[in-house]
Image (cartoon, rainbow, N blue to C red; front, side, top):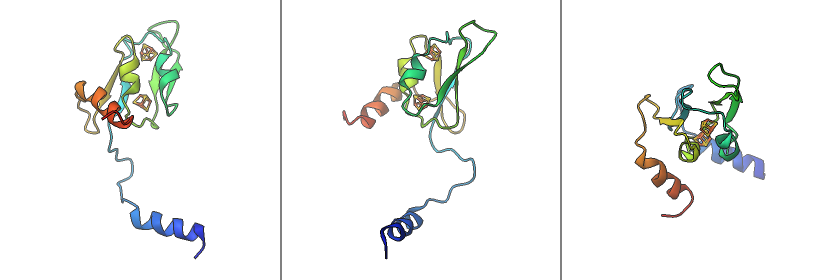
Length: 110
Ligand code: SF4
Ligand code: SF4
């Protein structure tokens, strides 16, 4: 069995069936009224999930998060205007105290 076949076999064994569109993690949502379009989150998002779009709310535009968001919380922590909230898959707000705890775990601090 070649390497490609081995990898395909492992991927098939470990594949987790998931309903189409079902999301397991929280996702960032920009609170457009608070966003100043400063672009800090665009710079810090590790998965390039944020873009600035035109808005009537301010001339610099506002941030918008796309589907590639991994729910890492970085933008919610870094936004100086508290313009990002994290929403759980069921639409409820994620506990803010969990932002830092999860980020520390991801970075291996605890
Ligand atoms: S860091 Fe905050 S204020 Fe700045 S663009 Fe992102 S969401 Fe808007
Ligand atoms: S939660 Fe993480 S992945 Fe999602 S938009 Fe914010 S920084 Fe990017």
